[in-house]
Image 1: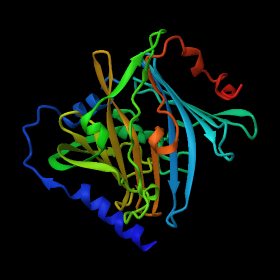
Image 2: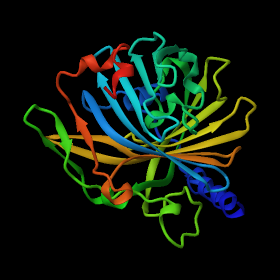
Image 3: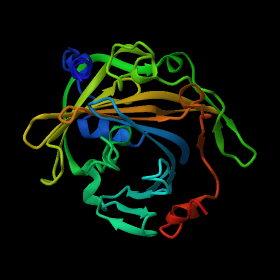
Length: 329
């Protein structure tokens, strides 16, 4: 589709072009900046409903409903993604244990067609995940081990942060339940993409009802130490004030530009705490002209209540291999 290709190119230029600023007096090394990003507080655990939209170059969409669970257990963070629909992926479950040490992650997938849980290699963290344009390492920009990359500070630049209009003015408010958990009580009007807005002229996967805010960014380069990693290098655009990963630019091993990732931020207020979370991920594959949008489900987008919880008590037993294939029981 001609319009899609033209708009996709413009979308990349908008944030990859930026305006070069002077190199700042480095208070932190690139590795130290990334460590701060990786370790920023997000609550001990989280539960959320997600909607994943996959769109090919013909504009055809496939929509998947997902329930996600994450728990920080000190030296290991455990996460589960449970696919609720459509039929071809329903009841598929993926679990990952990510260690604070340099130990390789442990990962399993439950396949309902054969009713078995299979262990998968941690080397797959740079492979496409479940037919989407994401990899496991792409969550919130970077979920891999910082020691797996060579990090280099490039420069400070001015660019545009894409954010839901609601999130520029208000927090996503969390209310505390009787058992101690915090649950989202704000219905956040999320970002609609082109295919949801009648008469749009942008690429159908691109953000339409968003606000673009000029911000200062640290630009950090990462090159994998593993020669079999599927990317040759990556650039991370980190908001200087909040250290939020706004953009991730990716090149293949041959040095050809490959994918663009963008992460739309929201601020969660629970008690006296304010933490960050993404209410939308957008990845565009420049080679295949394919895009994936992953977002928190809200009433104004897909007719579902926003479901987001933090600090859920006594749920460690959920994150076991034996439990992985029993989510529907």
